[in-house]
Image 1 (cartoon, rainbow, N blue to C red):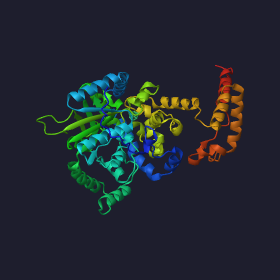
Image 2 (image 1 turned 135 degrees about the horizontal axis):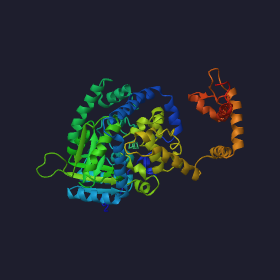
Image 3 (image 1 turned 90 degrees about the vertical axis):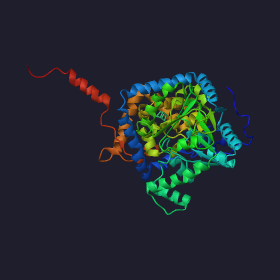
Image 4 (image 1 turned 180 degrees about the vertical axis):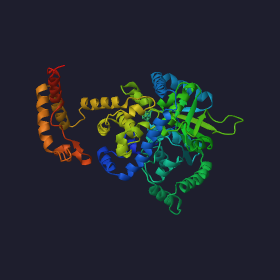
Length: 500
Ligand code: SF4
């Protein structure tokens, strides 16, 4: 594979992830962010309203399909097959993009990727770049890199537009602004447009639309993400609900599409499988409002499309994942369904996860891409209830991988000495019948003394009190299961009384 990086500028754009980590880290302390979010009622109202609703809509709309489970199996199999032959499909994609007049660039990390985009922009003389929503560009911190290079990036997805105006970060994969309330957004718009404050969503959307229309016409270059890249045809597919995606890809003279290398799918025939699942899983819709398929730049005689088309394929640690035990995470299509289904995400929101990818998939991706030690709380930020696995359209077994990550932490001795001592003692106790029984008697004796009149424990002692800060703990019953079972067996073995 060729690397088209010859013209990359030597200057390295500073960004929060210039530390060498693959993903930028915005909020490094999971525990303090989660503690703050757990008591934020306004955040919970917002999450309850949208996230829980979307999870319900997903389950309802999947019933429309004759066999949604079989379709999820098929999607997972297509992704697994593609990953097993990724080198072949990436080369096929490259060949077909070039055949249709486009150019392909490979970047091994976010620095190279930013350098490629800046080089293209400089060659095109671009001063303003309009962007549609792209998680990979968040991963690159592309906006910071462009701004450092003197090029104005403008987010055109409404949620991202609001966040950019207020220097904030997305906290959900498909609903980036979910953590912001209407008064916040009204304030941001009043400052941005110097207009009277309003919270009316229609008025706010109209302001953004009028402003963005003008800027689309001024932009020399558009940058988009890629939902799927079809290897056989060299096409990229973008799914949006606001129509801004196709304005970014067709209006400016130059279009740069950015993708992680796992976004490739083999054939156009595979696309409907993913389209049927993506919108249903992401937002409870049968299909997104706009599904755009672009193949190369505008050809002679065509009215729409850019004069130049570039496809930038970024690795940024993905090859390492591909070669390891966690390659299944690369099947992710970034639908956000696991976030909506997750009881932890619903409590602590997206900021707590600290980086670009929140929720259960973020709890995997961030430590896998940045290292376990700085993100050791994330694999534990799960109740392992399995809701994410049940929701995932490509059946990534997130709970199983989180358990493996926890084991990796123990093997790498990342866990603290106190924790190792407690779990070592626990493990030893469970392995010996007499100590297990003795432990049960002692636990019942002490804990029953802590219970209140309602039978629940309102305050646990010592380091256990963290549990009862947010909820009560059930007191153990007077007799354990073994005792009740023995009583039952004794009653069964008694000879029947009375005469027939
Ligand atoms: S892990 Fe599955 S459910 Fe979560 S974002 Fe990725 S594809 Fe969607």
